[in-house]
Image (tube, rainbow, N blue to C red; front, side):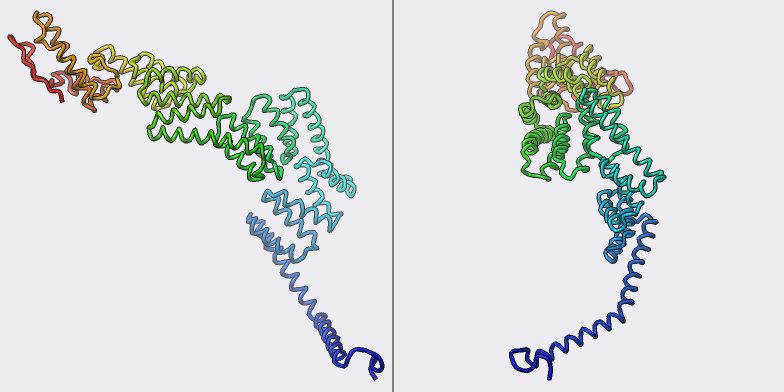
Length: 507
């Protein structure tokens, strides 16, 4: 009689048969595992060894990413092997990923606390990060096992030097000896290049000394050395903004908002930089399209948006100067350019634009002087060299015959204004209007000059030559030299007797 059978409630016959089958299956599984486990383990171990060997070869060949992939597989295959973690950490370090290396080194130490190589490597990383407290624990652990370990002794000495340097640098900063603090921090940064504190303190010292460029160089790495360094991104943006580099300022403040789009300080600064950037970009687009009046309006608006940073005011004044010169408003251009030049005396483009305004204003000597000054600052600039040559020709030309002065018009007069002035003067100085021979001769001379002025200034090619400092009617400028350079646009014999006859061409 089977146990459990008889009086009283109990499992039925079907349940007992099921239990027997399960016991039999479990026994069979154990037998099979006993038979196959050694083979399975051997196969798995061989695969791990293969990954480690491939990783070693790829590492030797400098194929770090491929080597890392094999070490990942080795760690997954044997998560209790301290040496595999250590080898993967060395790959991370070779790739410059020290943050990724630290967990692997810690895991290797956890699995094997007396693994000195891992402790020394972790301590070195912690020291470079400026984490002196934890680094000291690793170096002291190594020395406890091996008191004569020279590298551990050396690293511990460097750690002490770092702590002393940081203390001295902070003390120098507190007593406003910023240059002294910077000198001390040189060594601290050398020992702990991945420590944000040393770079941030040195950046602050550079800022207080007015060296924004070096402050930026120190601050930039700290954005990656801290997980959420919005303060550094904001400060970088403000520094670039103060240096007039609004595009880079915009890029940095956007990085801050990527970390937290609701950051109030970053968002407020972003709105200011964005508004100014848009105005400056729009102004430059107008200049490229030769819409100078619209560009002037945009630059004036930019000066209202940012009235405190001198660099933006200088830029706006300089570009307004350029627009006024290009739109042929010489006196306004001279006034604005002069103010811009006072703010930025070494800016060759301000000098160039003022020189061009002086040319429009027929002040050729001053134009020459501006181009000469610009050439002193940049002797290789082709535009400046060409401008100087042209201004010198115009100065020389102004001492001879000036067609604009003959007609009494400005250098930016259009064709209609030229013809109008010509008609008025031609009628005024018609030789038939005069009686005495002396008066007629004087009238003839003026009339010829008036006709020549009209001829040159209404012909685009000839006018361009004249504006470049060359008189197209001057025999000296004619190829081959000598001879009458030009046929006049009217019929008239100055040497004949009797009545003069003129046939005007007013086209």
